Image (cartoon, rainbow, N blue to C red):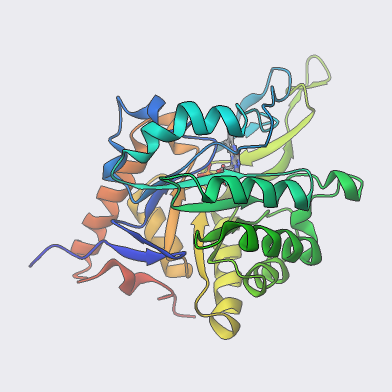
Length: 311
Ligand SMILES: Cc1cc2nc3c(=O)[nH]c(=O)nc-3n(C[C@H](O)[C@H](O)[C@H](O)COP(=O)(O)O)c2cc1C
């Protein structure tokens, strides 16, 4: 039997396979080059970028938990100018799609980042992290309010011109569907979910939180059932009203079968996050295992899995 077709079209991009590395877990790509040729995966999403550099939260910023980890990095990053000058040139030479994750403290900052990044050569798509606080609205996360998701997305889409805009949604809501629909209505090419779940780790002896920030974001295998459920909910809603908008599945993917589960739930592509910390070549391995799964299943095309859930 011939090899299954692994190339997919997702979020306005043609990807060589449906597996990307997730934002914040793969640095700016170059750090991982000794372990994984970026050309082996469909794409990589860079660490969340802001207009100005940010040092992030004080340590400790990471702690291992049962089946996962909790992080409170605080969106540390080197800022837009430094990224364009020192990181993007290397990324642009790789044989993979470069998706730049970004966040602003206001709608205007999202738009400014989108405008400047979309003109930079080598940026395939933008991913808006709407889990960050809206400073002008008293710090409430944009991503918990469909109106704010719609406004931020519309502003970024207008600023980004031809470059597709993906919107990364937070799981810290009861139902992600209103946010997915708001992003789709505002012109997003894809919605990506899930980001991390808010959690707390406690050191019982010291009666203290483990993280200096007290709370952090939970990721890893422990969150996969939540991610699958939210992808399924968003994909089902979008299929009805915005079939051109794709879902990108994220959360606890450690293997090719995990990735297949997300495709079956309705995702067109997936991102691998925490697994990169356990094994720096994890995303490449997930892509290879997904191909092996398709072969075992006798599939001619990986896209046959998309939305194949029977229920
Ligand atoms: C240390 C760390 C840093 C992260 N930084 C970002 C970020 O800057 N922007 C963002 O949108 N998501 C960020 N994430 C969320 C991941 O991209 C991903 O959505 C989440 O971890 C769930 O996937 P996983 O279970 O495979 O890790 C970060 C996650 C971790 C663990």
